Length: 200
Image (cartoon, rainbow, N blue to C red; front, side, top):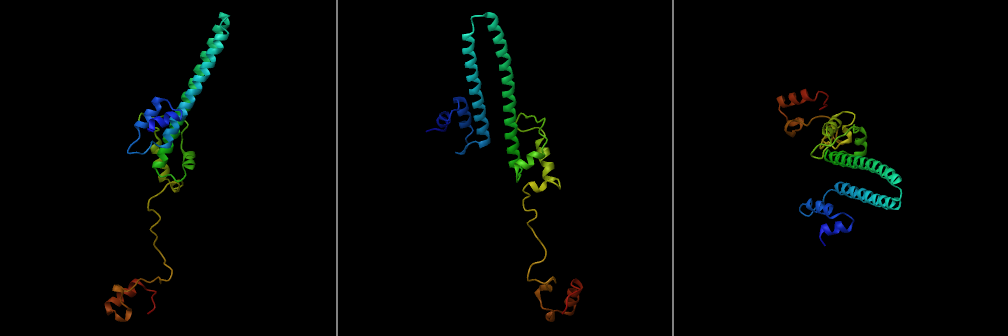
């Protein structure tokens, strides 16, 4: 069974299923966050259609009185406008959340929930490319700040430890690995100058 047909069986419209199928590259599916975004939009649209069907049925039952009918139509128009506004806000918020999740994942945030709490997203707006305006700068600032950089993977930083190794003395080994008794006078003087606390 083709991917498009499987998606349609899951409840997506033909257009949405085709959109997802078109984004499949080399056998790998679109990110789950993107699928969730489309699926959530589909659910909301289905609910809106069901609500409007019910409204039409109610209108047919109450068409005996034109004044009451007009009043009901006006009320339903306002309710539909409010619902569309709420729906648009929900979709916008979903798209922003998805864009933020993807950006934090790309920035190698260790805990996206903790980093997201530090971001200023109150007036977040989407750019034409689907990213959040100004988000990259905020993430970069957090990843470089002394009090929040630990929330991001830092590559090999902090893994190249230098210092005391158990079982070794603190003295540097003699030049060329020679024992003191086999050094020339000049080598012994240089070694003692570098390691003044050495006892021979």
